Length: 299
Image 1: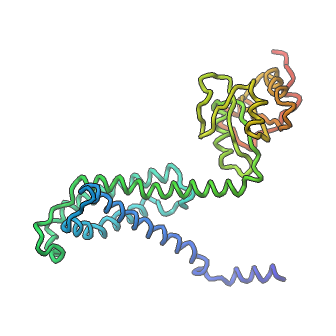
Image 2 (image 1 turned 135 degrees about the horizontal axis):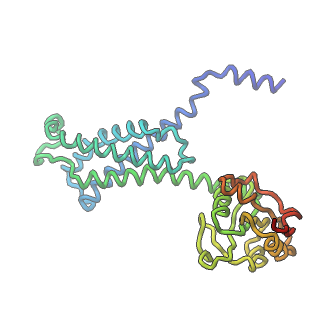
């Protein structure tokens, strides 16, 4: 009965009620961007005049605000910046912000070139002041850079915070993974694990001396295969993943032997053919089986 009541409540909900939340979130994002554009413009004036903005140029800043905010917001809308959920922003969204901001600066530069004939319409702002000049090119360039930093930076920070909070919530259930093999396959798996609700990649091991102490997606190549027992203990590892497609059974046997007393599980990537075909995914990771450890005669 309660279930039916809930269904009835949902059905009776008007479209306006259902859209109320998302609409306010969108308006909030637009308002935040308008504030950031205003701050970027003020920052450009402040930097241009060494944080000593004369009254004349402060008035110029006030007159410019609506033009800058309107052009920026319209172009952000046109380039789908507001269709993306900020916490899921990607490289594509950063490119969209860059394109919209750059095009906006070109438009604002053109508007700026036509502003002098319009100055008498706002002459009340400039009583007892000398003739108003156009906004300098230096201010336009600084504002362009600050707008990209502020608007793009907010979205990057939102994504980082969301990822961090999500990972902390899931941390009790995450399996700490040590990846054997710091090659293309290992990199691909580590990248996917960073957004997985089940795995937490901790470090790599690899016998290539040129990779030792380097970082892949922020994870260290912490040592060689011979150091596996020590690294498992140091990083409190739950699972060892062998990410070397086509690894010889004898070498895989050595890795298992090195870690057999460490009470960790072992998994392996699929065949080299899957890796070459771009089919490396967490769903294809499987436990090490007895057949993987048996040497096969060459045909």
